Image 1 (tube, rainbow, N blue to C red):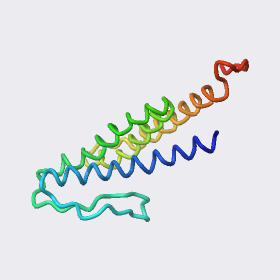
Image 2 (spheres, one colour; image 1 turned 60 degrees about the vertical axis):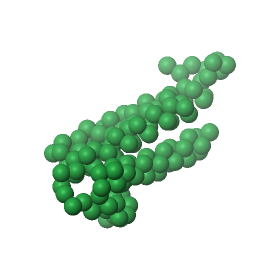
Image 3 (tube, rainbow, N blue to C red; image 1 turned 90 degrees about the vertical axis):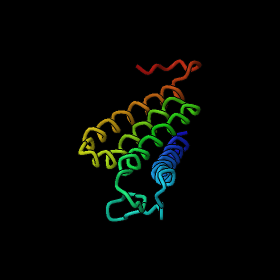
Length: 141
């Protein structure tokens, strides 16, 4: 059961990173810019979208599109359970911290702490749900 939970978390991470970068690309396309590629920078362990625009006036909207798409996509994981939704929201927060630095908002230390706290909370929910269910007489807190 734990392996399935961790595998699903890995699936959440990969899908949220993809949706985040696709969000930048879709917004760029809507605004008339060209999205050349979604690349991965191995030195910083960060994916990014390579976008060409003729004007910088759309840069704010394109930057905000990634976090908005990933936060909205997180709600899909409510179907699978609250613990997956909490994990996806916390990962969306930490993956959006680089985009928010564009607006001179440094939330990385805060988002990392929130990510750790919410990961711990979602693990507790998972354990309570799968190991201490209604039919089980063991207690957990």
